[in-house]
Length: 148
Image (cartoon, rainbow, N blue to C red; front, side, top):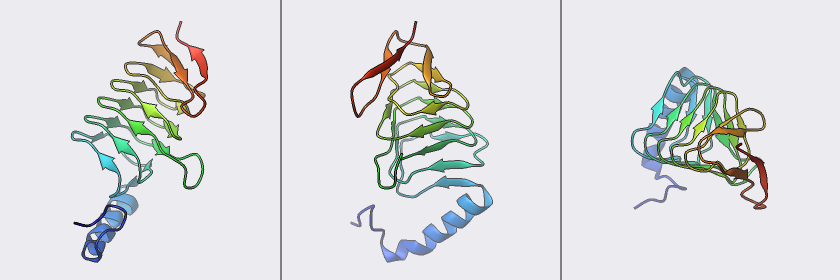
């Protein structure tokens, strides 16, 4: 069985057709290597860009203009939990996780992990509802901003 990182040569025509349809006609950059759980919904997906190493849980909802990826070339990418909703124009970058049932507001810039059940908005993203928790930097473990 082939590895995801190195697709078999026989799959190249399928990948080319997919990229022509999805990226150039629909404006959705959701690469074949992206790990997607069942029930992914894309609403008005034009301008959607997702790094090919991202992982999505089940029933994730994405809106137009969302960008999910790494902070520097070759860097690690976010992991998105189950039942997450991501608003239009949101940007989620780096080695972070978005917990189950979290909500990312439209236009939010998320550079730190978001716990389960928390709604974040703004630039930088800050919690506005959900559990009384802080958003922490996954790489340093420091806490910034609390939901009060």
